[in-house]
Structure formats: structure tokens, C-alpha cells
Image 1: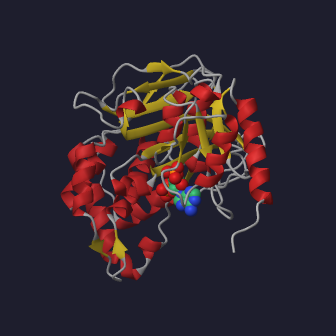
Image 2: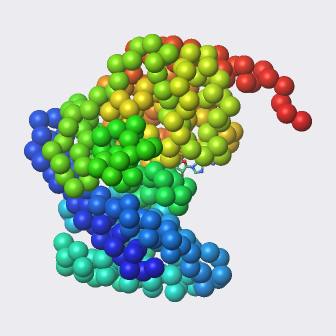
Amino acid sequence: MSTYIRVLLIALLASFFRFLMHSCSWNLLLLLRVFLLQTVQQEILQSDIQSKADKSPVTVADYVHVGSQVLVSLALNMEVTSGSFSMVAEEDSEDLRKDSAEEILEHITDLVNETLAEDGSYNITLSKEGILSAIDTGKSEGGPSGRHWVLDPIDGTKGFLRGGQYAIALALLDEGKVVLGVLGCPNLPLASISNLNGSSSGDQMGALFSATVGCGAEVESLEGSPPQKISVCTIDNPVNASFFESYEGAHTMHDLTGSIAEKLGVQAPPVRIDSQAKYGALARGDGAIYLRFPHKGYKEKIWDHAAGAIVVTEAGGVVTDASGNDLDFSKGRFLDVDTGIIATNKQLMPSLLKSVQEAIKEKSQAPSPL
Ligand SMILES: Nc1ncnc2c1ncn2[C@@H]1O[C@H](COP(=O)(O)O)[C@@H](O)[C@H]1OP(=O)(O)O
Ligand SMILES: [Mg+2]
């Protein structure tokens, strides 16, 4: 298995950061390239599970999450900052610091170092402590002041393990606002989601979305085709609209989203895909609406929305909570949202909001199941 993971991590490291002078307020454009090949993912998935020293299962997703976070942390350290930087990211090193995880940590350290040696971009070898502290650069609390990188090293773990959609999502917060976002979606067709089912062998897979505040949003291939400006669809009649939602019923209330769609007059069945790939697809007009209504008690994390939200807003869309409030990324690691998150174009937003509020009210008044 380790060879495949190494190939995947090399691919990730090959995703390098490019900074171009740009005429926006940030003077900065960041592009993250992710050469994650579907075939590599498939081979990794087939090799699947090893066992941790404490006999709890460790999936390939564990290696890829940690490897991805270490490599992005390293790249930010080498390319972007002169030493210290703040990163809010999903993983921390707590489990890996346990005695029982010694063997796993050794394995991850070897994989990362082999990856770094093979890639050759950085002449560096990390110790086990180096790996742990690279992971822990992601422990920042974020907040309303200063700059914070926001990373989901693998967004949509369930999709990744199913061989479906997943994304690597990186954003930059400046004084509490998202100013930059990059979404690498290795399993998303470059042209359009309509090529997802029944795609022909000629369809190019993999899409890299990027957005800089005030400068619009773009898509390009993972190999670096010329970036194309993207914009959300111009549909203003819900009858012609389709909507994206989570594949996993455990991640969103499919009954509520079905009721919203019905009230709005949407005729098409839901398009269910994992991860922030949904935001990318929405931003280039593959569909008209994004709905996410987690079950009660779930707290949204900023790394699950920061990159996707700026890609959509810079493509001309609107992203709000169920009350129509903008998402506030300045509150730390979590988002304080009312009930759910919705996104669409400016034309459809008023009627979408109305349907959302009606459907929520109706659900809250319905007798609860015994
Ligand atoms: N119980 C849950 N409810 C809602 N979202 C969840 C839940 N558990 C994990 N997630 C997160 O939802 C996001 C995936 O959304 P989607 O369902 O749209 O694919 C991921 O960030 C996933 O975490 P992770 O990034 O660790 O996979
Ligand atoms: Mg996530």
C-alpha cells in the first residue's frame, strides 16, 4: 500500500503554489495544483486497510489526510511565509502522539520523506517531531484579526473512500474575510458535471477552482490548462433549476431539501455529490442551487466552506445561512449558522430563501416520529 500512498502524496506535493502579480487588493493569486489521479485513488482504495498497533483500523484516508496536511503546511512554510503562519485545519497530532501510534507515525514519516525526496522540490527531511509539528500548525483558532490559512486536507472523506467526489480545499482569511480560495477536485470532470454519469473516455477529469476577492473565479485542469473565467448560471425560473446536496443522508436532511425543492418548483431530481466539489460545480453553472441542512447538533467548520464559498461568490453567486445571513468566518474554527447553508444565483435567491423558511417552519410543526 505504501507505494500507492507515496504516489498520491507526490502528486499532492506536485500541487505547487504559484504567486502571480495581480491587480486586486491582495496583489496575489494562489493556485494549488493537485495531480491526484483517479487511477491512483482506485488502487489505493483497493489496498485499503492496515491495522494500527492498538488494533484499531487505520484507513488509507488517515494517511492521506495527515500526509496532505503535512505537505500543505510545509509548502505554506516554504513558499508563502517567512517562518510562522497561522493555519486552521482539520487534523491534529493528538492520536499520533500516543505510544500506541508509534509504528504509524514512523510509517507516515517515511512516506512523507520518500515523497519529498522523490518530488525533489524541497531539499528537506522531516523527523517524527517535524511531522507532528507540521500537522499542529493547523491548530490555530483563526478569528477576526490577522491572516489565517484554512485547510481541509481531504474534504468528503466518505466520497474519497467510495471512489467518488472529494476535494482539497485551501482558503485565506484576512481580518475575518475570505480573500482567496482554491478547490482541487480530482474526480470532477473538467467540462461539466453532466459528464459525471456516462462520461466517455475522452472526458478530462479533475478541476481546479480558484478565486481571489474582487477578481472573479476560474477553473483549470489539474495539469494547468489556461484558466477559464467561470460564472454561476443565469436561470431565473426554478422549473429549470437543479440542486446539489450531500450524497450522505447523515450529512444533510434529504427530506427537508426535498420539501424546499418542491415548494420552489424544482422539477429535476437532486444531484448528490460529496464535498466542496458541489461549490465548484455550482460556480461554473453545472446546477443552480446548493442546499446543506445538517442534522440537529452538527457544528459547521470553517474549512468545509471557506474555499467553496469564495469560489461561488466570485462567480457571481450568493452563499448564506437559512435566514439569508452571510457566512461569518471570523468566529474561530466553527461557523455560527442558522439551520443550514444555501447558495444560488442572485435571481433565484429571494424565492429560494422563502421556500427554505416555509419548509423549515413546516418541518418544525410536523409531529415528531415516535
Ligand atoms: N454528521 C455530519 N453531518 C454533516 N457533515 C458532516 C458530518 N460528518 C462529517 N461531515 C462533513 O461534511 C462534509 C462533507 O459534506 P458532504 O456531505 O457535502 O460531502 C465534510 O466536511 C465532512 O467531513 P470530512 O471533511 O471529514 O469528510
Ligand atoms: Mg471537510
